[in-house]
Image (cartoon, rainbow, N blue to C red; front, side, top):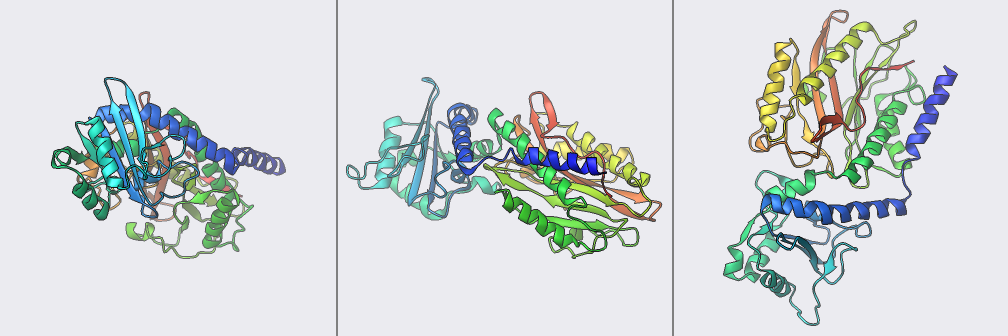
Length: 436
């Protein structure tokens, strides 16, 4: 047992040692941004047939798209910041300009000399006239909130500044904004692998006797240990973690109770099936993970077989679902096919998987919601694209004869979909963790 603990602690220290100092994180963030601007953005603009993209925000009220375009030393936009991206496909060039008083980091060059042209909007019009784009994309969207970042005041002032012939070129940049948000690069995926490993290791530590003393420790104590651990590592959580309990002598909670953040503070006892929901942020990327642990009773040396078998059914739902990932298929098509196949096997699945990346609940293909298992209008009709990451979030309800009740196996893991198919970003849980 002591050797196991030493090995466990050693592995955790290796994982945590991957976390970079603040200055190195800033350098990596800017390198990733430069790669995305220079190599990814031209392709996305070509794919969506938008040759000029305007991203406009004022300080502390940033468009969600602009927020993830700012360099490491810009924690917010300054005054009113107007970003202009112009793609000349024939010349194979991409211009990255800021109608602002400053360069926006090393990637976006200031194109406004206020002494020569005092009016910021007039300078924007000059830049547009000089390039004469076919389509000017702006960020508005009825259904995808992250792509709807152009606020009313900036929109009205933009329309007032533009000549009629330019105003006629304005189009929604919804597809471009979503593509920018959802598409992951090779550089980002290397970072993502580390981030998910760190997430798993924090959960492993939380679900251990280092943190939990059965009969003493409460679920809320574990929650706040996780929050403190993340802070101590210099990371952030993007939502408040939860720890909940399923027991042989308590009825299964409803879906709405299971997804409520106001969970009861239970003392953790031997025989408890524990579940966590936990996610962190590191250099702009997010994780979202749900896993299970079981507190061994006196005399038990392993998780009961009936719980092990129930957990395998959760993995089976994952396999059915991710096996249906095909480029171009919509979230609703994949959802309904997966639910049907699961039910044909006698499973009782529920799938509510969402895009994951620069935001936790990000934009992109949506595969159901916990209260929309028949499909999600519009967002669920968005097609699946390569080089995207999802929180593979789902559950299956299983009747346990030994407890004479249903339990719910609730799982969530980061998964990547690329040209080689689907893979978990950094493995998945395939067995309930025993707490000895």
